[in-house]
Image (cartoon, rainbow, N blue to C red; front, side):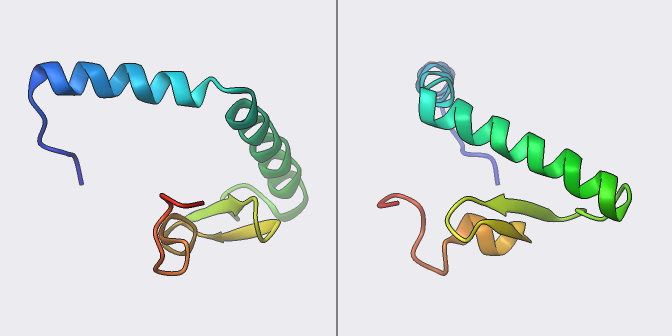
Length: 78
């Protein structure tokens, strides 16, 4: 669900989010995810990962719901 932010707040959030996404750790995780997704789809067929994300903690593909929620604990303290 999209946050209801003022234009000024939305612009500030874009800058913060971009800065975080470009950290070495996040870029490494993104590259790992892309590598694994390509390999998995090559082996199991295109569309086999529909609705799934790679969980870097569990080291496997899990549902988006499960991965984003972090077992009901959220992701702030991760």
